[in-house]
Image (cartoon, rainbow over all chains, first blue to last red; front, side):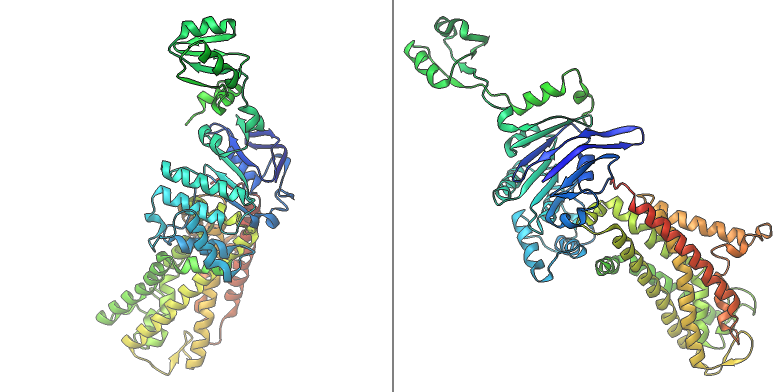
Length: 304
Length: 268
């Protein structure tokens, strides 16, 4: 769906995006990560033809960027750096004008498509108040509704849950998962690792304009082959497991070369009480912080 | 797309407020004239005002003469300066372009909306001031041209339409400056003020003898030549020059706007 080769953008002497090779496959839920200022938004803008690349190429849904974009953009829904609307007009009219502005917009289905989109983002009951009076969360929902107007086969969303409360974040996540099941490819940029971990199947990590990681989430967070055990009987457990225990931290043991299903019967047989036992899996945060901090502490320096 | 732009234009309170202001200004002048009965002497003050007391049908021309030097350019520069910069500042530009609306199409639609605003504004001033003039000063079927000969009411109507078009065309020049600046900045205010500053500069140079060599090529040089359309016979020379010079500026500036907008990184 999205392929870039050495995509690069300079703004004057600053290199915003440096030779990025993205690969987003059809059906992916792709999480595009990176600290603020790492070039995520510039990359998204290049994919949508808003910003022109200094060098390198990109293809979106098979179309060359930017020349071929006019043909594919009607099937791409996007949210770039927050929603935007005409403040003096109400929400429905904003969607209507946006829809009418571009190609492939059937006037006969417009009203229904607008109502569908509003329904999906939880705004079906909005009245004729001008958008200027909307809360941040409502604007965000309206922006997502605008992206959904034409049943897009690719959604490019920049920080889609910005300004939403925890309830809203879950609603939008569920909506995106449903759409993905219905066949929409998702490309979601975010600096919230936990959010991406809950939503995405594949991640790309940008750091200071460079793509430092691109991998399936399942591979990144695969079990390490170690088991974490929490027990009040630490000395007994140590006697039983001996040198297989790699680390002791209070009542927590890290056990190597074991699986939960073989370890638990052994512990129970030796009358070691167990509070908690589970496989060790690195979190996305562990992975991302380990690669972006490798000889480069920019991630801490570039935060908001 | 042009229809979308028109709907946006017509739904903005700003559009109607500025047209309203343009229409009220001649009304104030007319009321003062009526109450005081003191018209400027012929050849002094805004064109035509001296003749209005005798014949209200000439008031549209006088009214256009009143709003032309300052108020009309301000209104046009506000609308045109906001056209691209306003969308960029509000962020709606990125959603229009990814909708997708081609950049050329968007620019043409913006220009179309500006032209409609212009015609609407200039004809509103002409229409309301006709009503004001005839109500306050009465209607005389015998109309005296600036040359002292009589012209028929039909001729007067024709000439008023020509004046509306000529003034609108002069304003397209202002609009082009504001539109071009609007593609360079995200501040509508900067684009509007920049356009007005260029007009002030042009006016200063027009009145400066030392700038005589460039004066015939300045955008505002022939703005007031619409008065010649009320002479009998019509003095076409300056009007024609005015139309051509505005045309050159319009083509040049629209070219600049287009070239700039096509290659611009949209980072707002």
